[in-house]
Image (tube, rainbow, N blue to C red; front, side, top):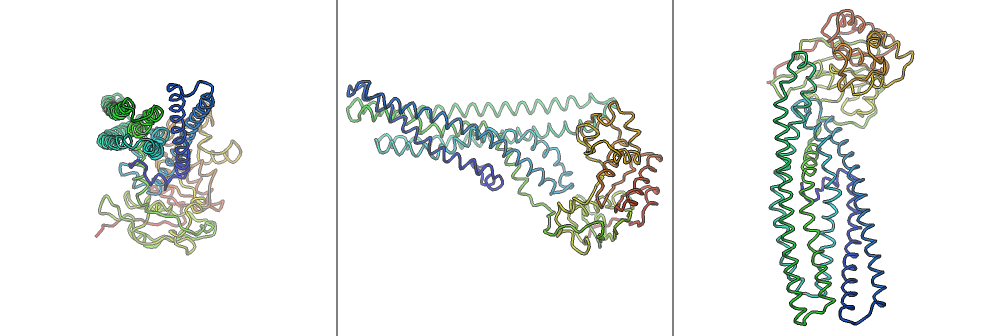
Length: 547
């Protein structure tokens, strides 16, 4: 990432406001620093030379105290505003990354990108805070305080200014050399963190299976190795940061000492006044300080910079789907027409589905039937605007689906995928409704009322990520109950009876009949004949070979 990546300003509005604020406060701080040094030099020089006693100096001391107070206030405001800006930017960036990852589609996420994306939006972007709070203010000061103080020194004594100009290039040179090394270590640390996160997520997802097989202790060594690798890379990154800070500190101290020596020799020789010499000696460290701090704070924020670069790389990927300008037609009256729909699978030379034709009329139950891998779920993803068809078209009341606004389209659809999304919380929180007659009726239809009686706290029983604490069949019933409670005009069920026994399957059929009787359109992916028999229309889905 560049010192100030233009993509940060392009994507994040809060970052633009923060940069403008830093530029304004940076100019004020530059003026205060120069005023502070000149006030001290003038007051001390007058006292030492005996040109004035303490009484005439008191106004200068009062002005100096005001300068100190103003600098403290500005520094506090910078840090306070920096923390708030960092939180807003991290929240905005997380939202953008998650939404864009969703726009890129399930296939993009399934291609080994889910766990790195989760790690990126959870832990990795947390490291962005030092970049905003520490690094950016120093970067702004380096382009405000450094040139302004150097200009004041030039107006006071051009020889000292020339010496500073000769020494200044050494600091950026070493910053670049050490910064490249630090970036390599930071990228390596981020990759190690993502590998560890991926392993842990996979382990947690399959922990119940491993425990059932008595193999829950097996992955311990692998997780330990990944943790040790992450810790080692973190320590290497920190060691480079400390060493680079020491190098920059040594260079700035040496440069300041050179200027102080030449100023002292010229003051002894009588070629430079006491007040001017004191001002130059105090201003010289202020010239180098922002540059030194930029290098030091860059290494402290390098992990966040690496994470942000990954986020921008993800955001720069073109999404295969786009939302159109048209509002979605009312699905209680609109017919959905699928014509010659074909989707090519990039991982294999297969087209699934291949030239699929279907019509979904309002109030009908339509079943998609076909062997595994035929493209039934893929057709649903295309219908949901989560996947762009390779060939063919989908129209709604004659309007191309690609031209329909995604938000208005999704607002009329209830989707129950093969793996329902269940979040940590209570059962009732996952249903997103309150206890009442409607919920009781829906639970009775799906058989989830009998599940509730077995749970320790009923509707208020807590479950984990993905429904941990419930069996696969219970999770499916919970998802079906949620679909009945919040049913929209079009209900899509992806193999709703896959994890259910024959008795539970009959309950699913009853739920489908209830949806149809209440005027809902139901699109169901089914393998079992019991569900297929409930359909008003059956669409056979087949795959083909890419040529």
